[in-house]
Length: 254
Image (cartoon, rainbow, N blue to C red; front, side, top):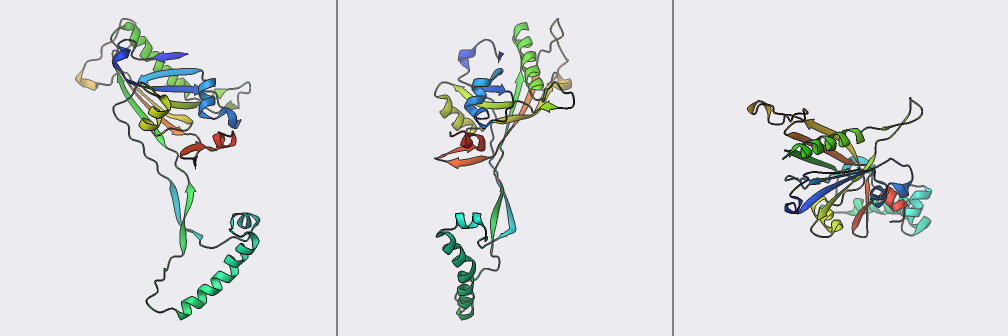
């Protein structure tokens, strides 16, 4: 079901954030960004926020990955030269390095820490959107309420026929649409987010606090609503051909 705010004066807004939600699925082909768009049951369109700050932070560990080959089938497959290259790196190179150390002078630099930075986990970026929505009429006030409720409900897991079991929460795709190519705009403004999950929804029906007395429409809907959304990438990304793809998209052959 589509939800859009504001309802009027849309030509004055050059760029929009498009939020699309689809049911969770275990198949890689259904967990791609294009599949989420094609399977979407919710379509929410809001203006591009004024504050966008995206941080990509990978996790590394120091001291747990000593330099040196691992004698295994995987080590052989990843070693240049195959089995001969692996055995050379594992046995011959350390012996030669030891002789070199014995004969070296003080002009040769030696490092005391022979460990490498070990990648623990690729970044799972967070995308935070904050809005203060002030309706111009009753219809827009109702639309704001529907949008907040749609986000809140779609953050929960889905019930099944068995009370003790649930399906995971929906998957989301975030896009920028407006004047220009959507793929280019999404990459420029948001860094091309992978498929996300909605991990946080904050709703404040009286965002102006005590400075402004609370005022409502006749049916009780508020005259202003503050909405905060926190999305987090569902899967870790992998670099390929100048772009970042999730493991599901790699498996699906994208």
